[in-house]
View 1 (spheres, one colour):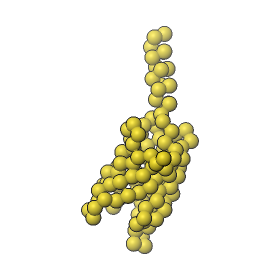
View 2 (cartoon, helix red, strand yellow; view 1 turned 90 degrees about the vertical axis):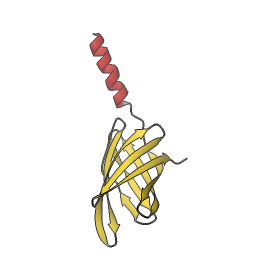
View 3 (spheres, helix red, strand yellow; view 1 turned 135 degrees about the horizontal axis):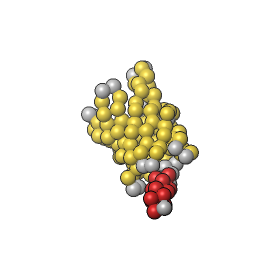
Length: 117
């Protein structure tokens, strides 16, 4: 019986991950200096949708988004000098921030996002 209660408590804790819906401002260091991107997340259970906005690359829709516990993943397709490029993001919610890793074209960027008020 104790094992059953313990498993139930663990499941309830895991399933009760924070809702990240809202606007998040992110920064990353790139080869030409600091970069900024805005993420607008919409979470429905484990499904994650929304968009990203960059002054350099414009707006892109979040695709294949999911969030399980504190871990999230999604892709975007952005226009890079007239060519489409798929960018894959993985990340983890850490308190009041989200740490994201973006991979595209053999490059990796580490983003730190904070929720906008």
